[in-house]
Length: 299
Image (cartoon, rainbow, N blue to C red):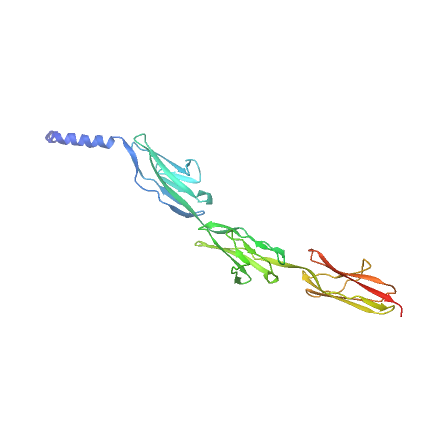
């Protein structure tokens, strides 16, 4: 008691002033800045918003101006709202995150940061097998996604395709080939690459089909009754064509076909005049035919 009496009166006023200052209302101040956070899909992303205020401020969070609810199980909000954790990042989580602190004193405080979702390359639309007629255009799709945006390259066989006036890799990642040639046939696949990894499509086949074409047609003949005449024809096309011989509009025997070059012959021994048609179906792309006559006369 004596010690208390010996304390100068000024000390009591100083202690009282400090006590009042500590309990005085204080508008919220966010002591940390929210920075840009990079995270891959399925990783954890954390935003921290340290607030100084009296009385204690209520802290709320938004993503792209849409409130994040405390009961949303994809998030964890701790430390009186100062710590926001995204438990398993998804592609759609990319955006701007803001924390707002409000205790009714002064103006609410707000800080914002961004989440950039980094993704390994993914091929969302791979190429598929293509059949195209020689001389037309072929497009092989390769749609990708990823962050950073993947670069797309194409491989034929074992070689990386180089662009030229006829062949181009489009902004979409698709491969476009103008004026398709027979040598364009083969196995193709696309590759998507960014700083996080590389993705490959399965190999697909580009087949170049060639219209029917008769290289060497049979000739017309004047022959005697009882004679044996060999009629010959050569045709080409892809896929390998079949050759049909018609006698007065009716089909006769089917002859041997070898490779892409069709050689067909017919041995004829008839007692009357006939008109022959050589028809070569063109790989479901149309037919081509040659007409000729064989006139029989008596000896």
